[in-house]
Amino acid sequence: MNHRLSHSSLALLAALGAVPALAAGNPSTCAAIADNTERLACYDDAVGRPHQEAPAPPPPDNTPFSARWELDAEDKRGTFLIKPYRPTYILLGRITNSANRLPSSPGPDRSVTEPLDVSPVEAKYQISFKTKLWEGLFGRHGDLWMGYTQQSSWQVYNKSNSSPFRETNYEPELMAVFRTNLDAGAGFKVKLLSVGFNHQSNGRAEPLSRSWNRLTAQVGIERGDFALVLRPWYRFPEKDGKDDNPDIGRYLGYGDVQAMWKLGDHGLGLTLRGPLWQSGGRGSAQVDWSFPIHRNLKGFVQVFSGFGETLIDYNHRQTTFGVGVALVDWL
Image 1 (cartoon, rainbow, N blue to C red):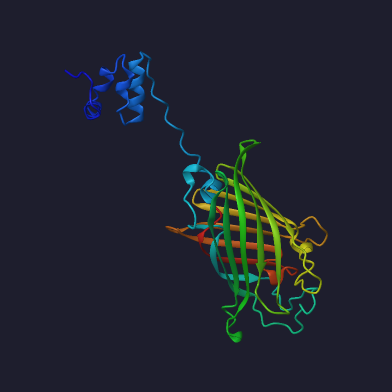
Image 2: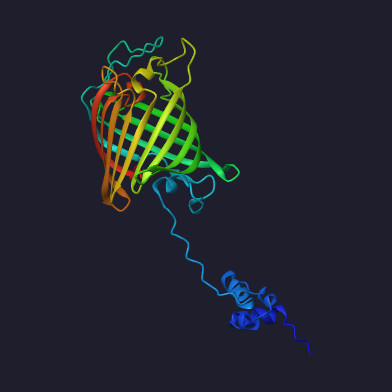
């Protein structure tokens, strides 16, 4: 009589919970158990070791940066999926206290000589998304992302001038993004580091052409529903005579700071940019507030003050106020 059990018999006994009893003193009978937890319990029983259930894994740390940039393993979604980047919104009405009717730049042939027909009231919208091009730049570390942001100022209420688009800024960029978990103290963590290449231009001919290229870095710090991004940049120099805006650094500076809060169903964003501390008040400040309207549709309010709301206005100071709706906010 054959006292050895076949694999099929062991599998049947395992399903009935009988294998651990048969396995006492014979660990080899545990190999046919498919379930990892039951197989480990069988081995423990076979060698007379007290068995303890492994503690449940902690819930995933679903932080703002991890969800937006797929930093943690449980957030990975693969490549070539469209994801939100910056806010996507439309301001149905935006008013400025100083319409820029004579855009100028010290670049050659980059200044308007006749006042433009520009209304102080217009619409403004922004579309922004990103996609992952490469997951695991260095082994399992780092991802390569491509982002695209387009912002347009639309003179929709300027019927006397056929409601033209006053300015559209195109901003593609490449970013290598790395997960970190550095403790910054007081509950704050440095969650994200990145380096990238950023191009921004308005795609127009002289004298309205404006553009620049930058090497950018990002440091993402977060705590709960608060996130902070420090973004310094270096502008690549251009040849004399071909630079649309040689003094753009004097107005937009060499970096910005973005602070974002999620307050229940409300979102609040603050962006500070440029050399705010210099004489003349160059630089800018922008506040964005989103609030619920219906399901995924949110109300959106934006206040801007300073230089560079758009590229054509990089050296033009103004304060604007706009109201509209948003599909995506900062967090």
